[in-house]
Structure formats: structure tokens, C-alpha cells
Image (cartoon, rainbow, N blue to C red; front, side, top):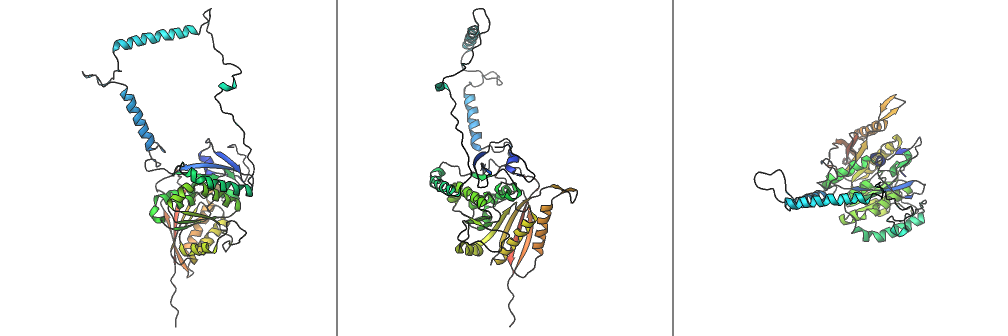
Length: 418
């Protein structure tokens, strides 16, 4: 399934570009017929963080190698006295060693003679053409027919997954994140892929746990939900928001796949619809990922962190993102901190006849407008953070990845004149 047919509007996932020859397990076809893959991402420990001589090498593997070396040394006696420290003598006398060598040579000569026929020619033993089935060591391979998703079947599968998750949680590793995603999509479906900006933001979250401990967090444009899942291992409540039933359904499945990481930490992830091009939150009872009145109140009263990973790639959506950001922050009765990760993507444009970053430039323009905004409701302070935090996930952290911090503070109301 790694052979992809490219079209003029195909966007290729970072996961596929970084691991072009890796085996990605295709699990199903989504509602629109796109292949859905599942990948595993390991959260590295202190001894495995990127930058070691052997990236991803665990302490357990190093201990096992040391034990093997010690066992090999035990097979030899200590160095003999008399200054012969450079060589080690195997156990047994030299006479026994000579006898064993002669015996081995005689056995080898006997083996060579066994392969000669009556005339002295080499007799080659051929494999049987039709080996019996009972001697075959290969397992039978049965093809699996993958069909498009059905909403009713998906609900039944999710119920089965929820029932079996508790049993499988004990067997799962607490440092492995499983994510369902697509590989190559059109621009409108890029949220179904995994991007480097999500990895950078996840690294920052894991490197600053005190900043997010016990917080109520809203993620805008969550996509596959990777960053929300990582945040839920530290924060109290995470509202994982995006738009599109198929995308939100994939995000919900990813949350279910990673309950073994979220529940022990006491976190709660709620997948909800939030359209940047709409003014109000969706509370319609007919919509699966609607907001309840209690959730709306909790979100506005308690949210102190907003995160967004690699969401600015289209100017219209970038405008919608900043309008949504302003609308939320201006309705918060308290200070809110926003963390945004973005990748500067170089493209050759006919308008400039040169390599440029139009989407990134528009993002910076919107940041500047937000900081200069004075409407009497809240003020914004923009700051670029260094992208040098510890790397907990294995990916290519390129120099074009950036991390920004926006702090919104409500403006106190002036006392009215009597």
C-alpha cells in the first residue's frame, strides 16, 4: 500500500516521507474510501532521547549487551602470569586442543568424501520438488478484504474495542502511542495526516509538565489527536476540536486506542466539533460531536491553555483560526496562554517567481495584527519560543519548525463616571 498515485492536489504525509521503506499497517478504508494506516510512536525515556550516540537505544538493551560480553569472557581463563596479558588461553591443555583440531580435520575430510559419487564427482543434493505439507514451516496466509467503513459497524467495533481495552491495557506499554492516520490526501483532508508540528508541540508539552499540570486545554485543529493525547497525560481536561465527521471519528478512535496512557494519568479527552468559519459552538442534538451546555460553561470558565499544531497552511483558514482565537480569549474572564507550532514551508510561486513562504508570511502578519489589537476587551502579547526543548519523539526536527506563545489578558473595566 506504500505505492501512491500522485495527483496535482496530493499532499504527502511527513510520516511517509521520513519512513519511506517502513511497513505501515493498513487497517481499513474510511468513509470516503481513503486507506487508513496505524503507526506507533514511542515516548523516549531520559536515556533514549534523541542526541545519544545510538538514538532509540534503551538502557535495557545496553545492560543485555554487557551481560553477553561478561558471559563470553567467562568462557576463557584469566591471563597467564609472566607478562602475557595480551592473550587469553581457553580452558583445557594445549595437548587436548591439538587432539580436538586433528579430530575436527578428520571429520571435515569425511564430510567432503560423503558428497562425492562413485567416480569422485561432486554429488549435489537437490531439494524435493513437492515437499509434503506437514513438513512446511510456513504459516498459511489468508487475504483480508478491506471494505469502506460503515457508521453502524464502526459503533459496534468501538464498543468491542472499549470492552477489550481494559484487558489489553495491562499488556500495553505506557510509552507507546498508537495513531490512525492517512498517508496522502488532498489539501482539504490534510488533518488526517501526522505532521512534524504536532511532534514539536508534543515535545514541548512533555518537557514542561508543570506548565500544563491540572489545566483545562482546548486544541484547535487537532487532526488525528496526537497532541491532545499527549496533553491528556498531564492536563486535567482536553477539548480536542476540529471539523468533519470522518476526521472527528478517526480522532475518537485514536483516543480509545490510547486509553492505557490517558486514564492512569487521570486525564479526560473530549472530541468536539469546532468550525473556525462559524461563530457559535455546535450544540445541535443531531450532531454526534456536539457541545453540551455544561461543557460550554466549563470551557469558557476554566480554559487557561489553547494549543494548535501546524494549522496555518491556507490564508482563509488562517484568518478563521485567528478570529476563533480572539473570540475565545475575549470571552475568558481570566488570562489564557496559547502555544502554536508551525513549519515554514518553502514553495516556488509564479507570483514572486521565487521561493517564498506565503502561508507562513500570512501567519506572521496575523500575529502582528493580534498584538497590535486594541479593542478594550483583552490584550495580546506575542513571543517566539526556542525550538530546542528535549526531544521525546523520534522525528526530523528541522530548522523550519517554530514555536510561538501568545498570552491574552482581559482588560479591566474602567469605573463608570457617576
